Length: 242
Image 1 (cartoon, rainbow, N blue to C red):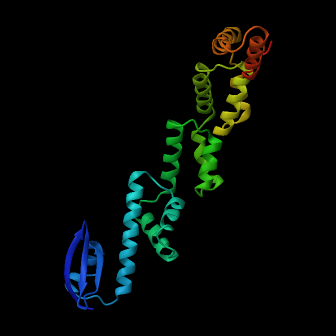
Image 2: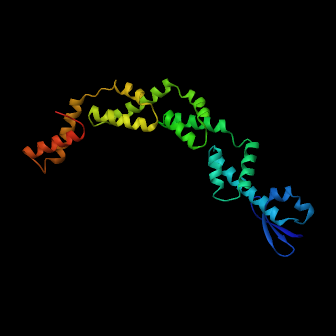
Image 3: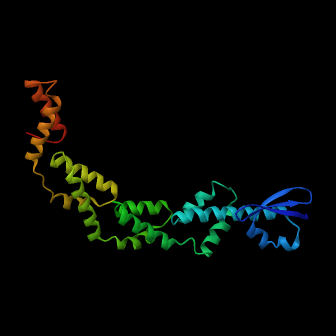
């Protein structure tokens, strides 16, 4: 089919008007790759459209990657939103690897460093997330050597110390909460308990402060035995015992 004219319609895009007035919007790179400026005709419209669609998807992936590094599984899931053509997806994945835009080792290292630097996530949680991303145990275990015991203990210790500053509950309740939180964050139970065993709280002072707060809050509504009962109940809820 002969090409009648071209009309620029956006960044790197042209509307190609054919002699039968049919219109195609093609990327500049596709026009150049297929030498359409020289030939002035399109021999296989379906193939041109397929190539153009693949280029558009590739361009979308480039925009996605520019925001942060991605793994293969993320990109595959992203592409499935736009196409069911498995061959097209495979071609894009292959090109990304060839262009150095997909790199398993780089992604894993970047992911680990981000989690170690900017989150409280422990090695077990990081491992689970990487498995969900499609990496195998061998790759992950080799990577996690960097997240050594000393670093894990330091992060557990900092987490405990930070929460201790705002703690208003008994030592028992505080330790139970920290144990649960840190296990959920991906740390080993034994490592957590060893550090929690070193934590002490001046419970009497904390208890007195809580009593004053409870009295201030409930003294207008209760008095005498009833107020004492409310105080004991609220203290019990916070883990304080007689």
